[in-house]
Amino acid sequence: MTRKAIYPGTFDPFTNGHLDVLERALNIFDHVEVVLAENSQKQTLFSVDERLEMVHEVVREFSNVSVDVLHAGLLADYARQAGASAIVRGVRQVKDFEYEFQMSLLNRHLYPEVTTVFLMPNVKYTYVASTIIREVSMLGGDVSKFVHPFVLDKLNAKRAEREGQS
Image (cartoon, rainbow, N blue to C red; front, side, top):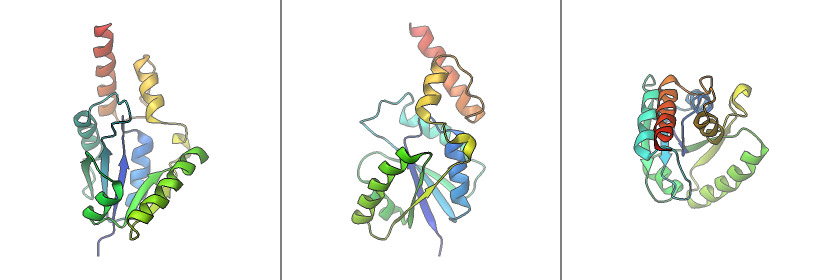
């Protein structure tokens, strides 16, 4: 029996911290599906299609990783339909855990067969958040140590596009 997990997130953009958590999950599960959440409550820098392209590029070397988009609906329902036994969540700090713990209890209520697995990234990524990466990059800062080169190119292009509009 294949042990499958889903790794959901907005991934705006997908950082090396996300990649680190994914690689840790692959040490536990046979297959991990990265699920991009199309969250209408979040203001994203990149469209779903742009984020999908970036994640595909970053994970293309992994034969046991797939990528999909959750356009609407509950994550627990998606996990059930995908045949996942686990939901992988990265936690960097206590604040992350408090929110994720609440979500895991709700998901367990909605889909009792799923287990939420909390994974901590390498300590060098504990302060790396997509929000910070976006802000620093849009202000011209160097984020090359925190994202894949393809993602860096997309961030630089987005900054150039915004600078051209102002």
